Amino acid sequence: MDTLTVILMIGLFIFLLVFIFSAALLTPLIGKRNILFVIFLGFTVGAVGGAFFIAPAFDDIPVIASSIITGTSSGTDMVDINVSTDVNISDFIQNTSKINGVKSIQSNGITIKTDPMANSSQSYFITRIPEQDSNVTSVEMPTNDTMILEIKNGTDPVDTINNLQSWMMYVSGMSISYSMVNVTMAVESSKYAQVLAALPQGEVVITNVTGPSVNNLKEVSSLMPIKSNIILFCGFIGVVTGLSGMFIDSIVSVIQRVRRKIFEFRK
Image (cartoon, helix red, strand yellow):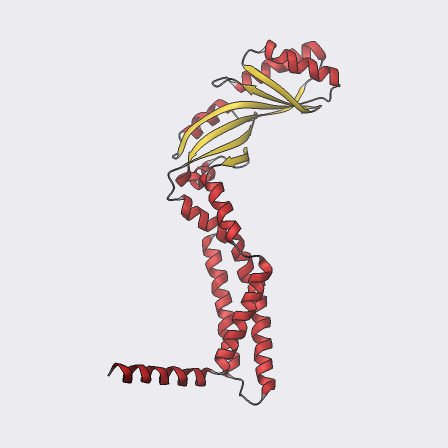
């Protein structure tokens, strides 16, 4: 939901308040029954408007507020992304480094999906892969068909994957079914949103973000009330609006008397 949509939804809620106020104006003051009707109408319409217009808008207020705060920040966000090796990684890194707001970008790891393997085979590959390719600094296997390789900065990850593919097929007959490169970007916090929008959609997956953008979002989100309280508060606003419309003549009369008293006091 963008800023314009949020403004539109708030406007629709204000329109509902106008409706409550207008309905109360048309209700003559004849006993307590009309007061109860106005209270019921104001709370019901206000709460429904809060549930459909204000509460959903509140979901995006932290994002909008944090974007405004981050837009004036001079900090740096670290963005971890996964890029499929179906993409030309060298071109991706080169093109991404030219995006306005990107301070640096480098590939620092590879995730490989293989055929399932026994525990003994896992130990063998964890030990032998760094020996087979000196650009690989460490190997982890969180599952029996997934390898996470850390590589030296400046290494061409595609070359490493191709070398491992040939070697693994030779020593065990196993193949690599899928692979992706782990890339880390340093991004100016004030241009964080623009940088993410400039990345090729559908080709990258953002796995982690650290820095002012995330911190500001968490801080603003922690200050937001829960939705049930927002709905109840909107219902209360509806009641106040309805009663204001019902007793508008008395309210205006009191305001005029107060203004006259102030005017006389100043004389």
